[in-house]
Length: 417
Image (cartoon, rainbow, N blue to C red; front, side, top):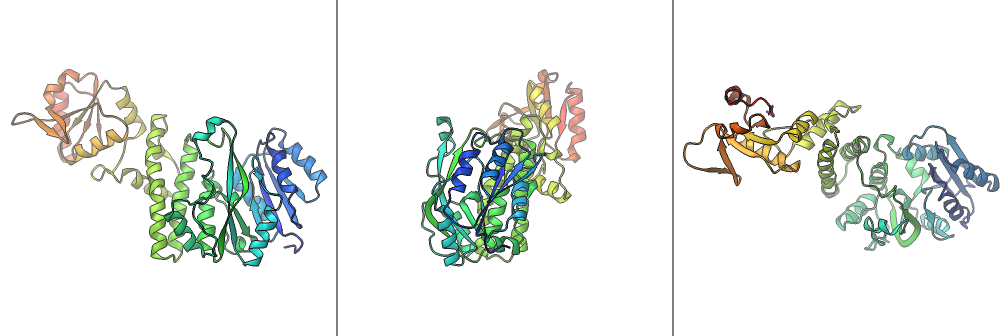
């Protein structure tokens, strides 16, 4: 490591020609001496590389690393870490800017004076269009509480989570390079685009000395592309891996009971997200149960997350089953016991509330199950050619129920147990 280089700024660049010059100008104008700027061109196919090469020719402290294939932000940041020679590391995004020309000088001085692993700070948000304001309020990247004392990582993370203001964006963090390397903290490419969350948890929790400065040093541009809340299988798998990696990280370290409890509280919404998005994806024709993980145990763990609310069923709908439900004019749940209760919960989770509940026979008057009227299955025989029947019974009773359905003319059914 060169003693002459104080700070290495790492900037992944992918098709950001529209914003790149302002980003670079905000960095090369920093007053700190001993600045290294590592621009990682991640397979851009616009004019980004030409802009980088132009700046590199004019500023000796700008180094450009370029490759043709787009490998993602996590890979680009790791490549920057491999190349970096500075005592401290700062990650910037190519469409954002540092606010103050003295920002890096101030952060470096603070880190040096107080022997910190990291200095954290705030950011201001600007909006590409007024429509973007619905996604973030102007103060979302500013800490409301004061954390200007020096903390160890566990105390800091637990406190900010308790205060509901944990912010994992790495461009809000200024890191000591030796600390990151000693603890082997890098970005997981397979957790991209959620790699910031995993990196921040690991880096912050293991640190001995960190503090937050209540000052905005960064200007974050909220763009149409970055504000997208859409989901696809790749993004879903990455978020799933992030969840599992975080659990494994917690299990591998001797964190306090308080820390573990607060982390599990924080992770509950992630689990909820995985459940909700699995349903959203199924409606789009994508079945998350078909995802293949490098570790087979992850498939089983994901299945446990998706099915934990349906204890007797132990599973959720597959894509072919959901398509059958969507194509049917009538849905009939056949069986009103505990299995029927689970299936009704499952249907409601998928946004299906228009269904009929049936049993083989009712002995005395009208019956209800969870406020749903129960009908004898023979009374629903008029729907036999336009319905799908969900068998809500264990295998012990299924043969008799299927025989009864066939006699009544039903030919489309799903056995969930």
